[in-house]
Image (cartoon, rainbow, N blue to C red; front, side):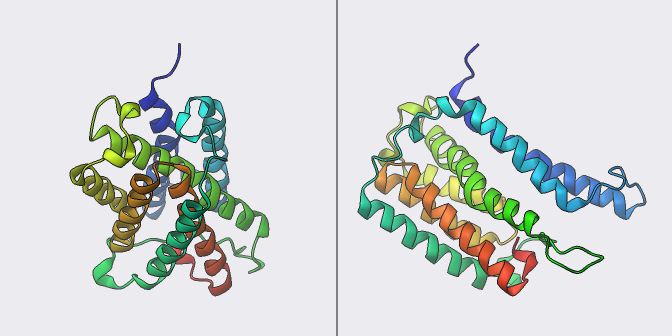
Length: 229
């Protein structure tokens, strides 16, 4: 049976979020003395998560009609996406004040606790996940699905350029709620929403999101500000 359009865009994202929820639960139980994961290194949760999400994307790829023609991108739109991605990155690393943050992020530290050396395999997987996989699943879910679904239940029929302010704003707020840097997440949501509406091409916010996350990864590695990961 052919999966529904909504399922195709929800399922990879749900795997990713599900892992985040379980990791939070396991971390909480560990503080209470219940170590359910035994000796499994917590840094390897992320590679497992990215592997499963990647498999889900490959399985459903033929159903992502909005990503069917990546080469039909206008150069000006592509440049705009890259510039927006850089701007969001700059905002992201400068909006970490307490008033702009909700909760606390432990981050992702790929340093071996015994040798104190960075595990470059984990770094490569983390950057691949953040710069390639996460932009795909989040843009498919938030921009292509949620923002258009808020306009009309049959969201594939919605022209991105026709999305109204209500759907635009609600999507940005929900996207922000996914991040502890709540203000940076809100501005990023506005930026990526605007790109999709302006260009009507989902690849443009995917590229912008990828640029933001890729630059963030390189910055984190160079500065060791692991809490941003």
